[in-house]
Image (tube, rainbow, N blue to C red; front, side):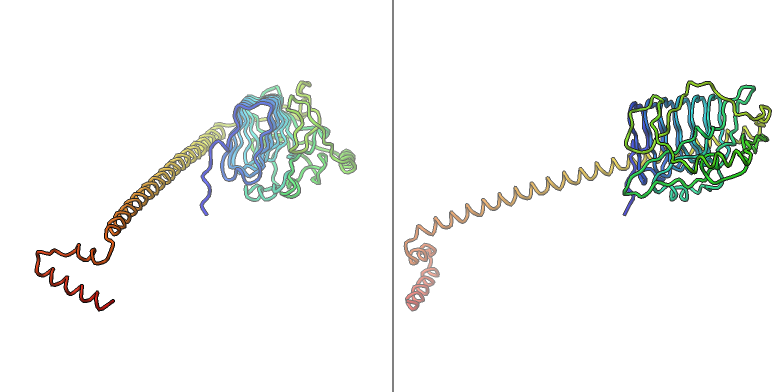
Length: 380
């Protein structure tokens, strides 16, 4: 059975406020998704996605399923973002809490007051979506952020353990929510050792180290207590029915520094900058191509719908004309039958009827008449 033609409107959220916006498993893959101009919204994209673009979103919560390509966030403010992706890019944003899985170094540009933590979101079938997106759950570079505009002022920091909260979305008929991504024990997981801070591939050497005693204490706290599920106060919409929500986050609080050496961030070299630009152009080309294909599919679908409508109209017209012709012939046959009956009634006997068919001036007809009369006589 052929796959249903996609409707481009099903793959974007635009110009919304005070709404909960949801796409369930199976409603997006294998296409891209775009989000533009939202305020005070909660977004759930619970499926495997090819690529995501997010522009001009404020005071909102954004939850994304595994993205096998890139996610781009631009001009966003006062948001909570949970996302798993192959590549994470962010520009002109401020005051964001980001719970992240990324298989490559996250990149930020012209942004401030960003707080990064490990991926925290659960929903049904997510392990299957990770496998479909070919994301290695054991290779999470959430903390190895590369800042294009690194200077004496730090633009981001690693999330404190007390700031980390579990979140999720659930639907009973789809099964239990699941988050397949492991996390460090200070965030309630099983991983141990140091957390790398800053982009290692760009020459940064930051580490967040935890002593044995501190690690044990933090792990004990997380093991013994149930995860809290408390509504946030970030100018978000009223509580919705779609999942767990983290506790209050104050975006107006003073920005705290990560604590690592400020000299560990290195400026990108020209080759790396050029490669990132080429990658951006490739991603944009892929996005434009997908958009063209979707528009083409939409036009073809409209043409087929028009042809089907025309065929239905033609068939309806054909049957109407056919029925009209049948009724006309039926009426004509009825008239002919009536005239024939009337004509028969003008002959009181069969003799007169036979005589009416014979020309008395024609000898052949006279002879034929005699033969008929004799035959009738013998029949009687």
